[in-house]
Each structure stands twice: as C-alpha cells, then as structure tokens.
Image (cartoon, rainbow, N blue to C red):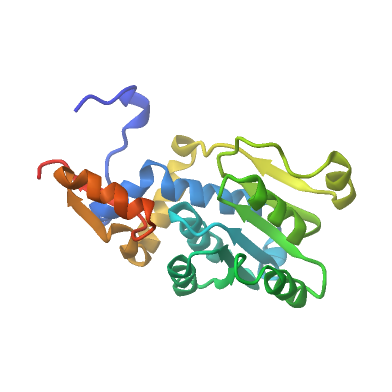
Length: 229
C-alpha cells in the first residue's frame, strides 16, 4: 500500500481500539468532534451545562457529533433528521430526536419550550444543504452559535441583515483532521463501545454493488469492504 505524504498523515494505531472503530478516524469521527468542539468550545463550563444544543443531520458524522456534544453535558441535546432509524440511533446516544419532515412546527415549538422562547444556544449543522442551514438559523437564539461542517454548494440562506439582527456567531468549514487527531482519537477510545452500529455493514469487496445499494437506500450507516475477500 502506498500512502501519499505518509510522514505527515500516517499515525500508529494505538492499543485498545478496534479496527472497525479506527476506520472512523479517516474523517467521520474527527469531523463530528470538530463540529461539537467548535460550537460548545466557545461557551464557558457553566454555560455548557445550561445550554440547549441541536444537531441537524443524523448520518454517520451527525451521530458522531451527538456523541461528542454529549461529553459537554448540555442541559438539552436534540437531534434532527427525517429517517426514523437514524433518529432512534440518536436517541440511544442520549439525544432527544426531532423529525423535521413529519412535524416541523412541533420541532420548533419543543426547542422554544425548553428555552423559554429564546431558541437553541448552539446548532451543529452536519448536512450540507441550504435548507439545513436555514432551519438552524431559525431555531437559534440571538447571540447563538452555529457550527457548520456540512459541505455546501448553494447560497447562504439568510441575509446579512438577518445575521446582523441576530448577532449570529458562525463557524463553517472543513475539519482539519490531522491537527485535531489526538483529541478526537482519545474521545474515540473512550466512546467506541457506542459505535457498533457503524460496523454492521461489513462485506467482501466483491459485493461492492450491494454495499452501495444498501448505503444509498439508508439501510446501513456505513459500509466496510474487506479487500481480501
């Protein structure tokens, strides 16, 4: 195997972490960690324990963000998606699931209810669609923090005047995996027992077509191919 720029990218696998979990360190788990640390890292310890945090998107990265956000022990942690199986996984990880597709009004009302009408303190956007950004903006309180790690190609769905009026604090961008690798790896080692669902789609490389079909129809969180088979 040839690894580009190996001097700067290869890290010796530590003891005590399963191979299936280590696969997530390519970018999935660090990106979830990055989203959470960008958002909650701007709060004081006291503010974190009183915070309402919303994760938008419960794919693999979003669920990793739920795990990372939970370590800050916020007062309320919500997870937003439209796929029931993903929402149930988020629930099992400690978040309250909210389905934006079946009950958008209820979603917004629930967040307003627990925050006495203010809105969420921190939104972690992990989708990469303008609609997800807009939802995050709408449920965010004044002076709220939005941490966006979704890959966006569309326009920002709010005006400068709207952002000005809300005193929006916004962090967007690609996760610098290598620079935060040690911290994310330490958290993975601690939380790997929660991530078994990520390794349910292990199959031979010869079944790649089937693997892509399963992933495309959202029947698995991730597909792991075994190249030797």
